[in-house]
Image 1 (tube, rainbow, N blue to C red):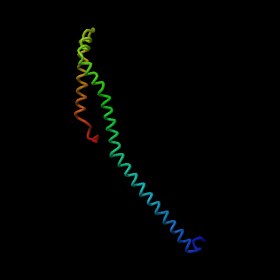
Image 2 (image 1 turned 120 degrees about the vertical axis):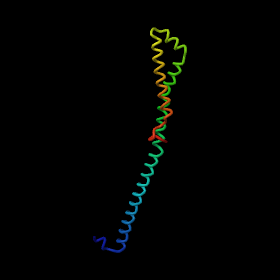
Image 3 (image 1 turned 60 degrees about the horizontal axis):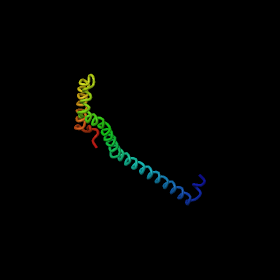
Image 4 (image 1 turned 120 degrees about the horizontal axis):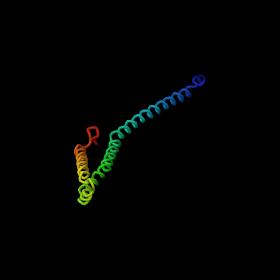
Length: 121
């Protein structure tokens, strides 16, 4: 307290320093809140949907490859003849054809329907 009563010059220096420190803290607090809000908005509205869409496209590409290969194999007449020549081959070929039709139908249904209402880009 002796320093506070000593002179008006010290009183001005201390009060201006306190005011400067307070204003710097307020500016830093407001700036960090604004940057936090902008970062969150960017991540939620742009980066996350783009990442989800990329993952969806990768999954679709990975999952359709076996179905496309199965369709090519099922349409191959040489393989159909070979399966028919095996013991019990006709039953196996018919079962495989039914399974392929089921898988292709589901893929076409999912492709036509597209993303759900919560996944719109």
